[in-house]
Length: 123
Image (cartoon, rainbow, N blue to C red; front, side):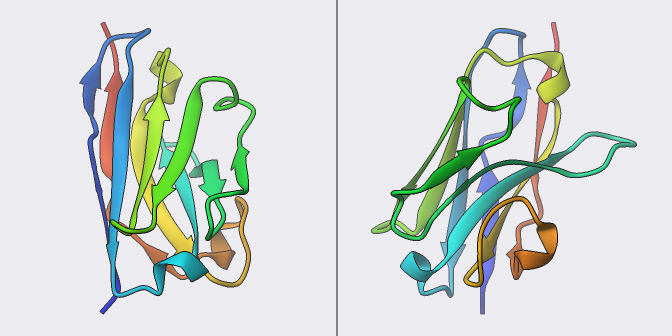
């Protein structure tokens, strides 16, 4: 059974940092690209970052570029998203997702999704 479980979200002040984790099970992990998405209340879900199966290829949204870093530990079958210099418009529920048939920010490509972890950036 495939499971993706996000953790690490919470309340952080503007300018602060946060590290999210996506723990997976039931996957042939290194064959899957992993993406991070977020959704603010009343807004569409948007892609934030993704990483290829071997960790050598990464991609970021314009908003994330220069502030966020995605990485993966294939031994732990876990993907991380380190976020720094957080802004209020970074707030939302962050989801991780897995695909073995592509990568990027097309949600339809992703086969498995976690339940999300909330991030609130507020003073």
